Image (cartoon, rainbow over all chains, first blue to last red; front, side, top):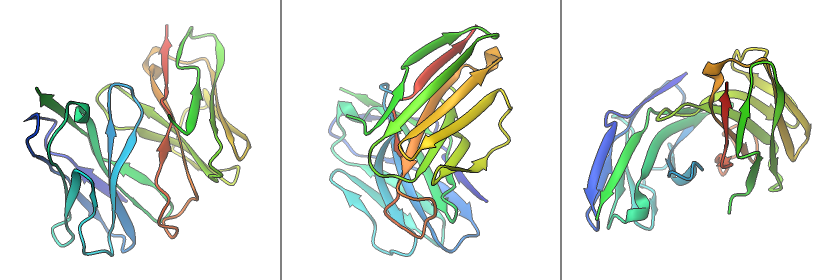
Length: 113
Length: 117
């Protein structure tokens, strides 16, 4: 089994600034990947970024990047140049053999104009 | 535009009603999922179908009955629900079940907001 922990229930960021959302996980699996989904008020869960555990290089997707620290079991999300449309609930998670997707408790991000 | 379509978007039902939620995807995905999500909480896995066969049932009460008629469709039949079953029900699909195929993230629909009165 896996557990995923997001210690920041709420975060806020000024528009155009950078914010980092924290995530830690615990797993006994050797083959897994990690991901961040966002859920805006429209309700749809949208994949933001994912990282295979075997890759050392941190994944990036435009303004979104991760800081993957495998030994520390940490997987934080950095959002650069924050935009109003980034306001959403962000869920960190992990998936391993059997495709069981484990989600963290979420971080609600507010973007201040 | 979402590639996973869920209907209806909203549903209000009484505790004695029978209703169904529908989910459709045309991405050729062979794994389909039902999740339940309460407000400000993460999605909770209910069922997983792989190649139209039920693969995972997370000890969901029998008043929820899933069905996968074909590889594109997933239904959730509801009967004798309780008010605490009110939630957002999300359908998702992925290319396959199993992380061995690495490009297999979850694709979610917009959900059905269910209210049980």
